[in-house]
Length: 499
Image (cartoon, rainbow, N blue to C red; front, side, top):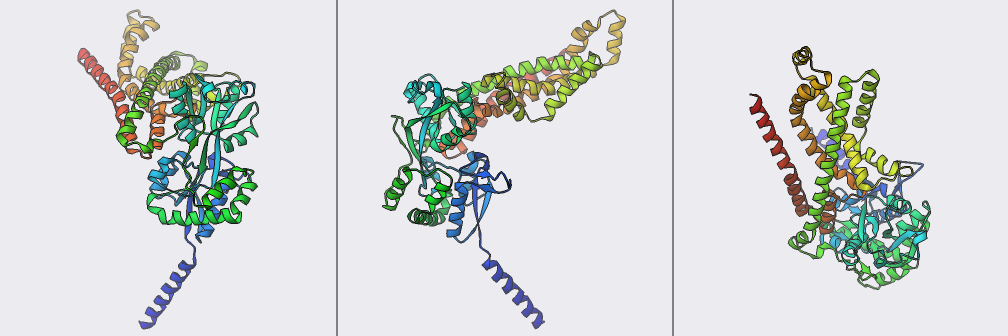
């Protein structure tokens, strides 16, 4: 017994010793979709990421005597994921803002960038500043300093801010003429200029910003350790070597490092365009709500209008498709069935991308038009199945009796079969409309500023999803509940009329 106990103690001690020798993981969050030079999937090894933020994460992990592990998180969700503990630090071209400083632990800035305007080469002499773009469309990424600047510019200069989910399509749409300018940081602008021709980057900076790492507010001790590592890397040239490797080193960085090493505080953002770039974090939740509520209400109008017109077209197309599948010949039925299967079997997001970006070289649809058409075409497939099953649910005896009385096929459909089928289809059709109302949030990828996208911007600037989420849910309920109540009322009336 004593021998067994000694063996167990030895095994436990040995296991503990081995565990103690294994370095802990340093989990860092980034978005590989953002691409180089920040974080991108290696073309030769898709499971491996590369970029200067990847090398900075490895630098920090070595300094902390840990093993780096990449955690893929969508860029817009990095802050929330860090706050809930999904990773230790977020590194993916994350901008230093007063919002992040208020709710997160942010590292010292490790790179200085400039917000720059890009315009079509033919317009380079016309549009050099934001003020000269009055009444024009200017594209940017949502939830960035540039977006906040454009929102302020909209009030000052009448600029229309167009929000994108990625940094590729703003520049391609600029060349296509869908927008008149792009405001983003110089790292992104320089990268896109290597692959997309036809636009010019204006030399004057609109604002100055910095990239930082973000940690949870409770992780300030690790943040302080990361700061020491970053400052040491500024002294010994390690950061310079990383940035030179990725061709993003410039004269702005030595000046930034000199200020930081001298103990100078670097403010989150400065603007040279007369634009107030302060974030919503400096406001109370009530004041922030008052500031964003008009935008949420306008976005709600876009959502309900888009949903109504899309559903109207979907219903019309669905009726035609269902009628063709019930009454058409074999070729017609086969063609319509193929359409239904394709639209139901492919993601609606893919269909939206194809309509807006995929066919842009041949047909340049406006954003709202592509969103309206995409939703309508997708939902028409589902509506057609509802109406087809409703048509086939009508008693064959009624149809035979109508034929005996001399009714034509068209009269039977319009006067007997159609009205009864519509009553059967009302409840599922109402459910589909409510589903479409929520699916309209997908059209933000086409730059349509609907309710969910506006809420996401509000939450990003506020640094919390609590108030924006509650307001968004309340607005969606305010739009969907009356519709459900109307459908229930119609069902009761028709049921009473036929009983």
